[in-house]
Image 1 (spheres, rainbow, N blue to C red):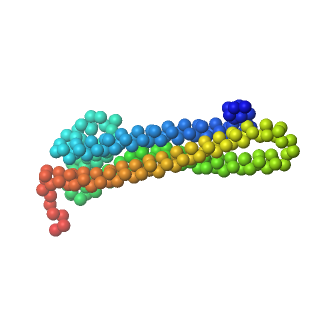
Image 2 (image 1 turned 30 degrees about the vertical axis):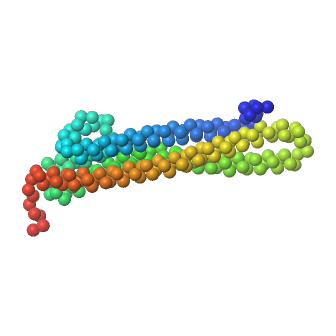
Image 3 (image 1 turned 90 degrees about the horizontal axis):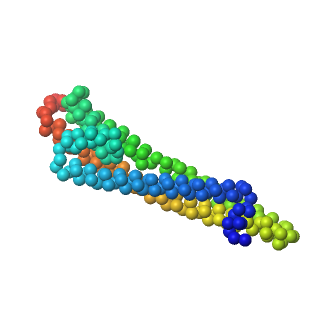
Length: 230
């Protein structure tokens, strides 16, 4: 009797749990791969865009370039685009007071950063759920093993019982191993991905301070303001 035969001859509930585990494993791998691809793309864009900003290019020209592809932008480009758009609007139509312009621009940028955080963090809750379910399945598997051991000990028909119980015991062991694999993969990658997200958000916040200082200088290069503190 090979292991596939044993898995097939196990009781329906154990086979269903094993099937759920396989599905959970596939889903978790899909989410993890998708997250790493998004993180790599975000970090690559962040590095290149900051180089473009500090290379001496006029930020107005950079804004116009992004405006041409505004439907496809994300990450640092979207944060800059939303911030500069708010900056221009506030400067031209609302007020010429630098503090208010910068405050409104910062609010728009922070709102965009929050949206980018939600994008980076999307589906992460499912990894957490998969981790918790795998934890419960491990506990359930241990209970099943204990149940079958007790049943085995109190039954006198040793060979018949061993033949009937062995498929279930083997399947439960496979189920526990599978649960441990799912649990370890989801836990490790959940923590790594969260660290990457925190790192990206920190870089976004640092960029916010840098770009606001550029905006502030741009105001004073274009116009002399009244001293409103007098």
